[in-house]
Amino acid sequence: MSGKRPEYLYVLLRVCLVTFFAAIMLVSPSFSQQRVETTAETNSRIAQLAKQTSPPLMSEYKLGSGDLVNVDVFDVPQLTRDVRIDDAGYISLPLLPERIVAKGLSAIQLQEKIAELLKASGLVTSPEVMVSLKEQRSQPITVIGSVKSPQVIQSLRPMSVLEILSACGGITEEAGSVLLVTRKVPADVSTKPDSGEPDLLAAPQTFTVDLWDLLNSPIPKDNMMVVGGDIVTVPRAGIFYVVGAVTHPGGFILSNDADQMTALKALALAAGVTSTSKANEAVIVRKDPATGISKEIPVDLKKLLERKGPDAKMRANDILFVPDSASKHAMHRATDVIIALTSGLALARVGAM
Image 1 (cartoon, one colour):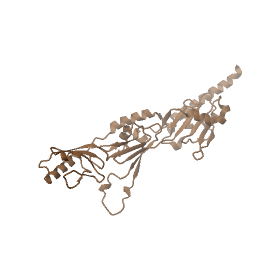
Image 2: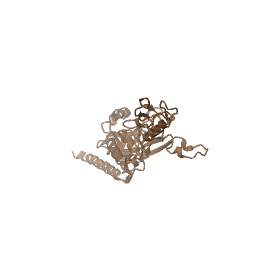
Image 3: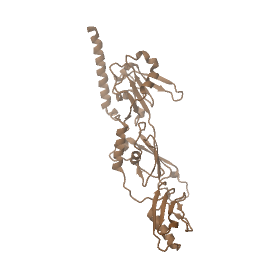
Image 4: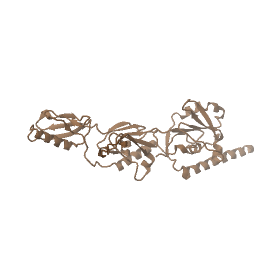
């Protein structure tokens, strides 16, 4: 019995040492940004902030190409009908000899214009015209990528990035830490003077929005306004896994500091190793994207925790596997075992939100 006491004390000392260094990493300034937040919590905050930052409707909707309007002329059934605004921005009505420019006008402005033309042509002495928007197609905002519900949003006004994300149900677990807004033509391109020189700004522009700043700034500077014709893309983030003899195995989504993610940080996110772990025999399983062949990179976590060895960088799709005493004889099958272990693991967002 007495012979086992030194071994017991050694195991106890090792567990205390692991816990101590894991606690240091979690509270250190360099690691304080690596907080874990579930996707549901992130989406809840997106919905809340969207309500707080939604801009008011400042002006009446301007009609555009593709919109369907209903023109109702009182007591003249021949002129009462639904009319689609064509690509050039015009509509045509029977009995009127010329097409009517509708693009850029509000419904009230269009009905006043139709009334003037009817009176000027002598068709109706005192025309009473009502124009209403029946179907909107001229201001599509396309949202694609890692959102709950990718869709095309027809907006009556410019919408903020937060409103767009909220309207799509928020982001998915695979979403990265940035989103992209692609604008085909700048909103103010029509107001630029014609100098005869090619307008370099007429080419599509892409704006990058940092979700961390968007959700954590008192006044989100990145909550830009998205207008009709814009395409909002939420790219998929990289994911790495920590499995085996760790306290909280799981998948973690790389975010802002993807280039700085290391095996030591990954271990801290998994809340450290268990008492039965073989920390000095850990490996990073990495698949070569070109060949599809997986290789094992040895990582001595014991030395890392003692600050005696070099840290290893983690990449997207890497798997940090920490074996325990029961699995040390099956290391040659680590890749097959790890792939099975990672299936069904819950993902956690790291730092981005």
